[in-house]
Length: 303
DNA sequence: AACCCCTACAACCGCGAGAGG
DNA sequence: TCCTCTCGCGGTTGTAGGGGT
Image 1: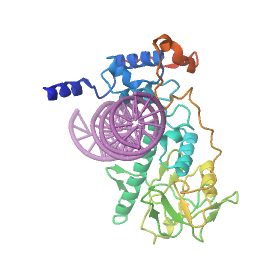
Image 2: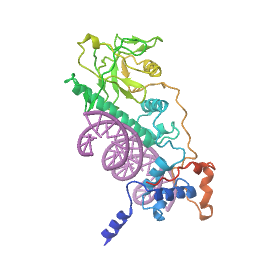
Image 3: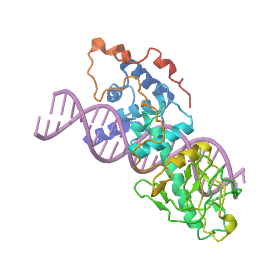
Image 4: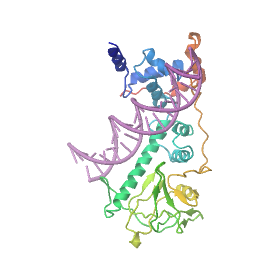
């Protein structure tokens, strides 16, 4: 009997995608009580969702001023890359520097980026045994134009040791004597790799070549890597004497960029629920919010 | 047209921290 | 001081959509 009751309680909890009506209920709750008391939403029978689920939905999708559906800009990417190297996987903290972005956004962005890197590394290692193939797991990769133009990229000479940090998945490539100096006098590291295939991008502007074992071919020893000027400068500033970390400095003491200040959300919810008497319940929390805050809540979209 | 693969994103889960009883 | 409850965070999984073959 008791088992049946608990089963019934379990069945009451709804999971999966949110419906427009549920969003509406949640928004109304937040309008009335503020973004807190999540667990009361279920206890009041408003929604058959856990408090956790409600909070997540609000924070990640319904909160005003979110950049939903907006891809990360180059600036945002740079901020994420730099802050990740500084703070580690503290997504919530990193997200405070990016107005309109949630920790989930940042986490997903970073995760995609890491997967991309892992895949490229994997492909490159397997390609090493079949270097004649340009096929990239079901997709053909176009070979790129080669160039010796030092102003558009840096040349890649000898293959050197390339390591991947297991803890952070950061790829590190030692400097070598063949480091290049660009037209601004900035030192560009020799990645010790040679470009054969179409490069993939880190975010929108950082570009790295795939690796090749066909280094006997002198014609292949120099290749164009289309770094944007901005990215090249960024790369050049990573002036670690021993290692060059393509994805950002492993432990840099000074930031590479002028980082934005943490974005302060309107009245972050207190760590604990505030107990509210009936008299003050409605609207009292809304004092914490700008008057037009809810004007910017996206209209409920029907699925 | 069908299939496969990749990517981005939404949502869930587990755990730890902090506050109140 | 301990226990319980709630919240927040980070990791993971599931899935829809797009693009290539």
